Structure formats: structure tokens, C-alpha cells
Image (tube, rainbow, N blue to C red; front, side, top):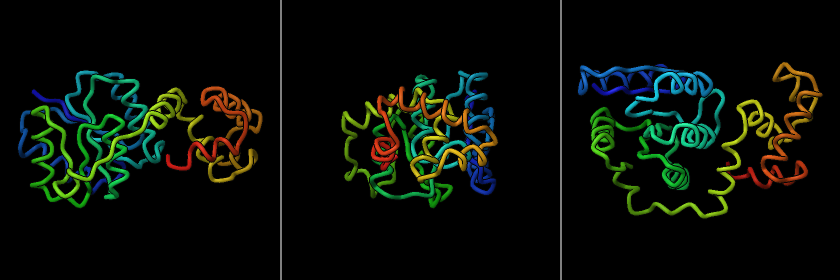
Amino acid sequence: MYHFHVADDHPLFRNAILEVIQHHYPNSKVSQSINLDSTITELEKNEDIDLLLLDLHMPGSTGLFGLIMVREKFPSIPVAIISASEEINTISRAMGHGACGYIPKSCSPQDIQQAIEAIMNGNRWVPEEFKNNLTPVNHEEKDLAAKIATLTPQQYRVLCYMREGWLNKQIGYEMGVTEATVKAHITAVFRKLEISNRTQAVILMKDF
């Protein structure tokens, strides 16, 4: 019996995925989560998951952080990205960072079923029109991804706020923590990313 996990904060699309799974894999087990923290918790409890269908953008994760974090913590769990983005660069990078499939949210139920079936058979899947346009991820980006994977979700949030130009006071207010806590997170981020200031952080994160 297969065990699928659907991590997506949009109920309409999550239900669309569930309907496809329940129709084509009626005896399977399906679990769900709506943010990165609860996804990590579920994966820690269920490392027998046969396929994680992971939304690229949901609470706790923007860009590739969720994928990078999951691949680092749970390398044996196959991950298929589900996303509204159909940019070839995003698809290439997701596949380059370890996704076994990329399912745009514009896909029909038939396409979703074909994608899941292909992945469950051990194949990689992206929409036909993108197959011949994927580009590899360079070593510098893979090295940065490995460093980003060492951040905690809170540290990653602080990093994203820094990228947007927020001040420590603003970050603390948004996260409900003191400025001292924000500074401690920033110190940890700088150490883990091997940088020394905000400008370097912004430059490093411009594509993440």
C-alpha cells in the first residue's frame, strides 16, 4: 500500500491532488500538511512515505527552501514539486536540487495522474514542453543550497526579511521576538552561510 503526503496550503488544489490519488490508488494512505513546519513533523513521524507532493510556496517556505530542507533531512523520500510557477528556470532548479518531478498547478487531472504514475515507476517527470529545455544547476548554487539547508526555519525567515531590506526591529515585531533574538538569528545565519554582513546575504539570496 502506497503512502502519499500532500503538502499544500491551498485547499482547492490539495483536494484535486487527493481526488487523483484516491481514484487511481484507492488503497493508498494519504496524509496532509499546510506549512513547512507541519510537513517536517509529518515526515519525521512517517519516513515510509512513498511520495511527497510539495508546494513550492507555502507558509514557512518561499522558493526552494522547502525542497532543499526536505532533501537534506529525508534523502530517501521522493519529492515531486507542485507549483503555480511554470518558469523554466524554476523547474530546472527544482529538478537540479533533487525533485523527481514538477507538476504545474495548471495540469489537468489526467496529467497529474500520469505524473504520479511515472514517478512511482521510478522515472522523473516534467511537462512535455519543458523536457528539452532543462538546464543543470551549477556547483556554486548546490554549495549554497547545502549551507541553506543547515538553517532552521526561523533563521531562514530572518534571512528572507533581510533580503527584503527589513530592519531588526521590524523583523522582531513580525516574528514576535526581541531584537536580541533577531540578532542571534542573524549571527547564526552569517556563520552558517560563511558571510559577514547583510549585503552579502542579499547578494547570495537574490535567486533563492
